[in-house]
Figure 1 (cartoon, rainbow, N blue to C red):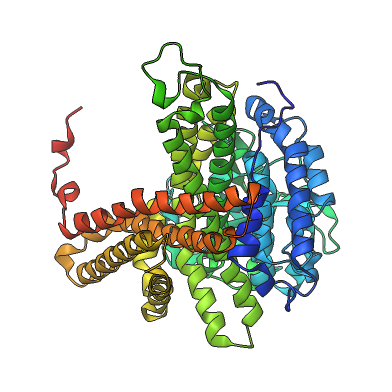
Figure 2 (cartoon, rainbow, N blue to C red):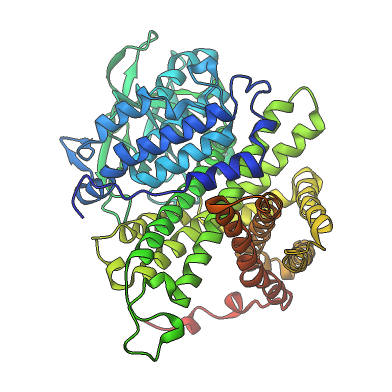
Length: 612
């Protein structure tokens, strides 16, 4: 594929439906703190983001993948065109739509920002990681930093002057963060001397911004072992004076950059801190030994961002496959398979291709709905804070509960659906002439970084389901149950809604089984063995619910629609029916499998796996 060709595609009509018709953007926009926002402003931003994604970021996706990043004289050089794209991104304000005006932002709802991020990531996932990490690091400092830290760092990181990273992983400790050996020694002036090595640091160095601000987990000398003894430090690549001017190198060096399967234009670095005992950091918020709780604020945002990445690539893979299927002619129509004289038809006329496309369509729409729903809860929690504390707590609880679903289901399905897009293309899809080959490579990392999906599953069953005494989970199930009762006898969707009810019963039964295992030491191993399965079950329940919710709306509105609008609403119905008939039954089957309490993976001996 030649450089400069945009392949990013999405459907703005579908995005508008999700934002305005399904999740009621006007329930949030126009109300404090989102007073300045309304549907017209949101539509304009979405349309302009799509233009930018296609004209600026999209053409750099394949060329950036081929060129990759390189390390020269200890500094990372990003692919051609990235610096100009970075400049334009911040000039046009796409990254600050939901940022507070206190930090130079536009104060918009998160519901809008997640859709902006979908388009930016879909057009160029590797590029969008650089500003995404800076955004997350700045938000953490804004929430946890001292007033001086907020003033010095936050706005500069949010407006693109400086970049940012999160530095957790070390060579000997991947997901086992508590085993970190990076150290911090307090200096007389209140700063800390930092020493250690971090690996797999996305955007760990680049030439897009004048400085990179690292958030580094390290253990202060004498602190407790494990995660409880970790503190979080602001460690600039270049030291910063009190007035924001740069003061010289801070003994942060790039040991190497990884050569990866995908997202090759995103620099994944090995970073060495303090090799010459000259690396200085400052404690976030001035508080010791709370590094993990502080870092989780950024990690949760990063996990949602990964779910957005997954949706973004699955979405553009679907629309590229759909376009190809409408154009590529091969074979006769399915009703004339035995007629050698029958004309060749576009492959979208073949039953199996239609099956794959509808599977992709349903999952993309359902995952987008799940993401916007999570963002809606975020917005309403902020909107209701101090006005209705019970409802604000409900919305915060749903954000907590849905985060592992968004991250894991969005990322798992992304890789599967991108691979399925290759299948639609056939052999052509396996070649670099078409974008789905790159989408598939890029999407594989999503289920691994920011906490593998098993970590998400253990987070769900070990923490999130029990939060607020189990109230968050119970309220989620009550929301699903309320929809079921209201629509069980729907004239078109009733059977599908009853299938949703059966899936809900399976999830509830499995949740009770997990609770029982947690109280029996002999059965405790069943929890990690079943956690991934349960997370997938709950994700499928949530997506099935939201697809049916969209279909109920579409059935009501679509009765009066004509032309393309009628076809659009019809598509919402078929997405929901496909999912209810072909995916939701898996939830019941998974519940039955969990009930067997199979422990064979932990009962088999190591030698029985095979001798090599």
